[in-house]
Length: 179
Image 1 (cartoon, rainbow, N blue to C red):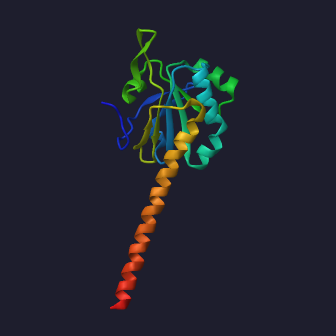
Image 2 (tube, rainbow, N blue to C red):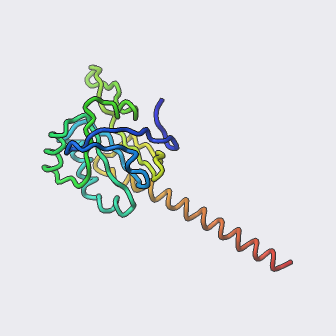
Image 3 (tube, rainbow, N blue to C red):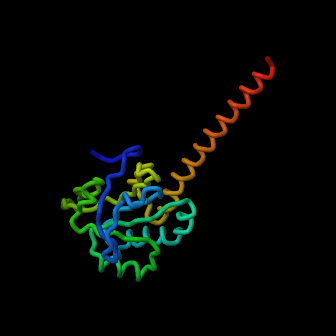
């Protein structure tokens, strides 16, 4: 069963680049960008991480915590963070248990050869732990734009709903005064 917008994000426990235990549930009350990527220090993964790094302040202003996750070791994550000056946490999922929960450990094919690997996927999770959006077609060089588009669309919908309520309230008052 593939996770989709509106589903509760599965909780998990794993370690960050420094070996500290991290649980998704510990981010309750915060918005989270949880992005699954194949491998540290590869061209696509570096482009994606650097795009998020370069736009990290904008993501934080919108209230997002960024967590990258791959099957790489903590030690490799430390090297990747140091080399690319990444300001966010990278999670290590060497046993692929988190990948399994999120459905990102999949069969892939290259040059006719089938193998298992990470599906580059991002889950945008709200403050209550509910998935707002699943981004499966990740544009590694413009990933932040894809994420912020979700935030902007959601904010616009909230404003529209509030405005609609206000208009109804004014209409009711106007109708009541006319009577």
